[in-house]
Image (cartoon, rainbow, N blue to C red; front, top):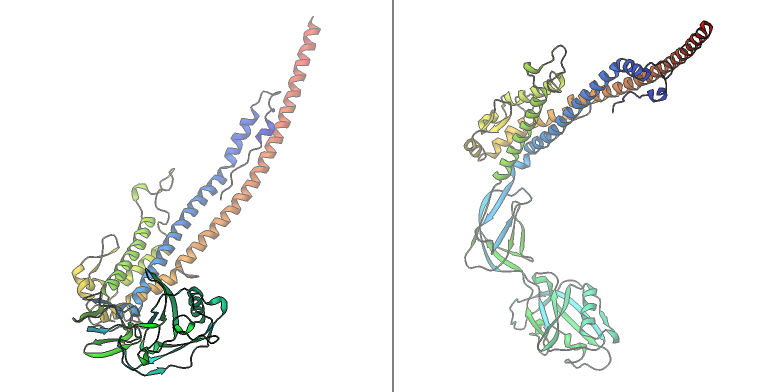
Length: 496
């Protein structure tokens, strides 16, 4: 913010009427001369503000460079893998944990995991009061049309669910079962035949089969109209039950590279070194799953870094360029760039270039960025000059990891990305090169503003003094003019 001279000449707008002097113009001309130092301060403030903006932009670009360098120096980037499958309708693969080892897998699906489902065979609108007890467990067979089978309970039965006199509608019974969180969810299926209550395991897997013991209140055990209609036990073949078994609870069964595997869900978590498979349908033909290095993410991290480095170099070059044809000349304004000759910014730029030009000993295959296809351009920026070299280098992620991520004791045995990250962090950190330069410029701008304020106070006092002096002169000259007129008048009278 800059301060401009105030004007109090309006207070002497009537001065000069008696003397004939143009007092306002005289004071304005004198103040214009007095204000020249203030104008110089204002011009300097504008220059410093431009420099602050330029350094701030360099700080922002350097922070971006830091982010991209740290992404390259993260060792997990170079072990990251991706997966593909020959038939995504059969199986999908997940390597999001980033630890899956590269490999090929042949997957056959014999059956999918599912929960047990049983439905009231006849339509009904309401049953009778009583209690319902649901027991989860495993049946010894998973056939849809079982013979007599055994049932192994898994833990204690859920607390009885009470069906009161006002809860006998199918909708109320459904809600009571769902509120009990007994491992079974209830719903009502309605078609042309009417409404039927359907129960299903809330979790897949063979251990989530269920038996239902429904005890009507009173002495009405009619299995077709009372709550007893919900009694169900598949281990007896569901003989006499009004509940029909739609499907048994079962585990997923698959073969991975010839090895039989089983799971209570259709997701085979961490089936092999960080690889998870999701089974989607049975198949007679194996689906092939391939896990390979995520070279696309690696390449993007490299190109993002190249772009960030080039953005910093381009902007610094723009803000520090010097054109002899437009340099400062006597009697002219400064025309070179805001940061021309700035030692802090130019020094930082040279440090960036030094890292690019330093040979690295961290990898046995790659010593410079040029070895992986990244070349320095004539303007100091970087570019992927050889996509062939880069593609070839990406086939050796372990060596690229060494080139970028190694922490050493010297510049030569420290990874390139580690060095860039450290340099960028130091530059924008407290007391760093760019931080200190921006802080210094802000201090200079603050001092300039104080000088402007002091100068404005001086100018206001000067203007007030000149105004008072010229008002007094105007008054004196007006009085002298009046006296002169009076004397002339008296002389004329005396001559007559």
